[in-house]
Image (tube, rainbow, N blue to C red; front, side, top):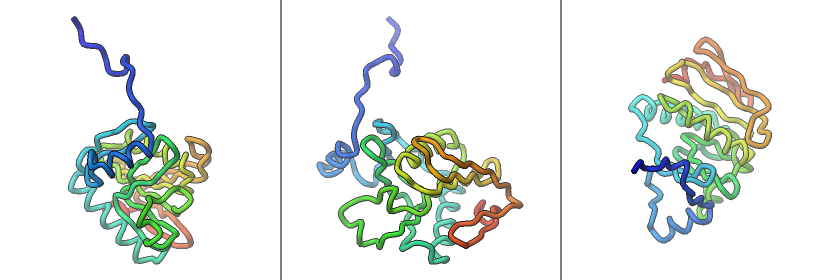
Length: 185
């Protein structure tokens, strides 16, 4: 007998509250490489060395500008009932102490940066969750295609504006400009 495809079976969706209870009960650890996307727990692959390096460099450069109250790496963003994607880099407007007992929501965020190195399709899936959360700006740093995708003005699960910048262009946020080449560490 053939094994049924998972998509043909009834799957259990989880809410953000369900996941928070699993973390509280130590069924899941904050260090587990799991994200909640559209109610499903997604096992996230370990980043490549280049993606991890780029994430650190982008976070360091953003932090040096003084934009936002703080810059975090690998932080969950609560995006309604069914989504808790983890941002590779996030610029948050509220002080860090505001998140001692909760994760940021889209209302707390100025910018999310996702680093794509062979994970581009998944990053675009997460883009919908960040839009639903109300994150105002998302950058996908596409290491394979040597460009930065800038998503602005979320509208439901989509974005009103999506622009593509190659390595010879510059991107701007809150009056600060970066060359795309500098973000493609």
